[in-house]
Amino acid sequence: MDPLNDVRQQIPKLWNRNQKEIVQRIRDEWGFSEDFTEQELHTICGIIEVNAFEVGQDPIKARALFPKACLLMHDCTPNTGHTDDLQTHQLTVRVLRDVKAGESLTLTYAHILQGTLKRRQHLKEEKFFDCNCRRCSDVTELGTHCSALRCTKCRRGLVLPSNPLNQESEWRCQQCPSSVSCESVILLLEKLSQQLECIGGNDVAELEAFLHTQSTVLHDNHYLLLTVKHSLCELYGKIDGYLIPELSQQQLKRKETLCRDLLEVVDQLEPGLSRLRGTIMYEMHVPLLIEAGQLFQGGVIQRTELRRRLKEVQRLLRESERILSLEPEGSPEYGIAEAARDALKNMGTV
Image (cartoon, rainbow, N blue to C red; front, side, top):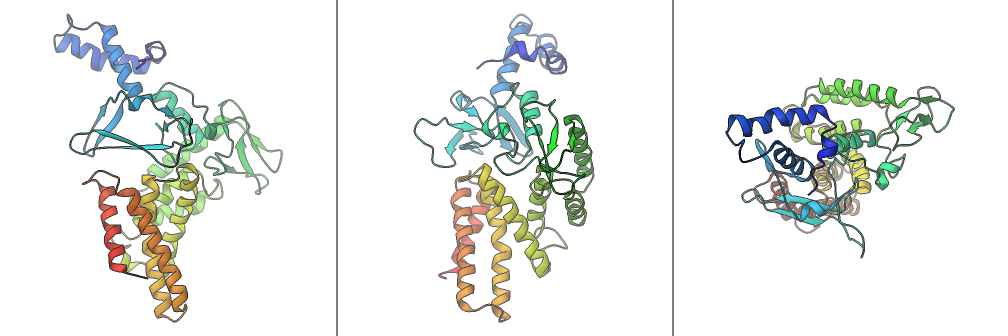
């Protein structure tokens, strides 16, 4: 477990914080100056910062070391996921999809729905390396366009980095000669992120307004818009004023659309037994089930079409239950797996 002391010492803010809050506290305030040198304590800090996994649930979380798990390589489209037991915090690592013979087992230290600039910044600052994985190297992020901007000049093209691995490279429109500096892109994203942070977490109207306004600037799959879509797909049906019985047909359809948008991206970046994929599938089954019943009762669709729609609902519930039942018992995700199981039982045979 390399502590990367040489690298970390070149980051004064990090090194000085550890020196003040950890090294000096242990040696001077707690009286262990004869037991540990400053270098030894900085080395321990580095081992934890570079290799530790977060365990626990809110409000109590911690960082823990797992000697075997830390051997896995990072990748922004990982083929493994991990969970920790709520009582013992034993870590379980499992493959998310089929892995070919000779293929490396990988995990991710970054959020799967973040864009390349954001992910690489996080990995550089928190894990002290530059990620050059297949996703980071692709200007389209494997066709998802999670970082793409819309051209404000021609209004047709997408603005993408000329070299996503070089933060100094220009961003260029794919349809016209227009270009913009990476610095300008970063400033734009910081401004939009600040606007988003000012919106209340349960403010559906404001979140929808942000989507509507910024979709003229950002690609529909841009990570900032995906963040909003993820929030909205969970808010519709969960908060006062937007509980399931209160949702109009238009709002139910909106929830379905948001879920489909998210699934399209997640299926590309983290297919298989992804926790995120399982939760989105569960959210999606609700509007589909209600809409199918309403259309059948209204005489809009016949029994054959009703059965087809209900089979899609069952498919979503089965896959959600299959994925989330792997989560620790007592976790929110395992609770969703149980709810999916109950919903399937209530549906009976279709």
